[in-house]
Image (cartoon, rainbow, N blue to C red; front, side):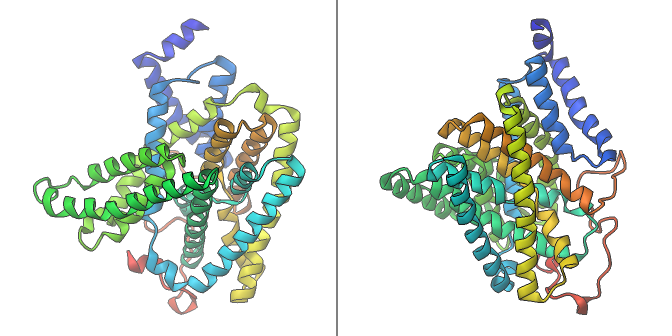
Length: 412
């Protein structure tokens, strides 16, 4: 076994791992198993079965690139104008999410005997959709333009709320820490436009086609800065994406469709390493029978609640039938990346019980597989690209007058 571990840390070993990560998940897609779940399972098998890659610095570095690129992509997709256009419906949606967070936090405190802060994080892990993962997968569910618009805007709005709650929860250990961390985060947000403007005026004219490298560098630097603040890498990368999107008038290439595609391709290459690394961080104690049972309970309780709240809100606001609301609610169910991140924070910062940690992992694996099953997502061809094309296979043409919202592509 030591020889096997040593061989996998050679150049040839990493090449074999790269091949497995990009081929095996594609083979299993024919059974509607998401590639992210397969990569996560491969990491778990490598670590638990063969004690491989558990503390490998190369895998951790590649995983960092993946999580940063994924949340940078999610930030680039934030269109403030679109959110404002549907502010009334989105406000109702967010109000319901806040009430749901409070209710789930209270239930977690009472049933799992956790303090308020870790209980709030468990609630976030249970109810927050993983926007980057959802946006990367949305083209596979055969949704029409209106449905894609609502899935995208509601997932983004929910993640904005969740990131704010995550920041407040992690920094609320003391008033001094909260004030200092908030000031540092506000300072970071304020200095980003200055840096982008300097790049647009001084650097870009002298270094053509350097926007992509600059954007990734800023995402990595800001991700590291927010990690030092104790709110993980994803917050900084997400903020950079939003800043770049809002800066597109002065530097159109920074948030163009080509840039979005480039970031998405970059993320699609490195994200499997994040899921593999997350799987490799598991321990045998995380998968006891109580942990598996808790994960199934989470799934059985939360899925109807999450689908029901979306359906009821859309029924009240739009008079929409449940069958149509179902097609918006189900693609928002995967919590994969957000749950994995929060579970890692809970384990490292709050010494979370392995039973609860394992329950969260089981829950997110199940809710990530569910949309492809319920929506009968088409099975991708083996050599088809991971990224959704301009017109997704199976998407229905909808007359303009039938849409209740503008074409979301109009502002891009």
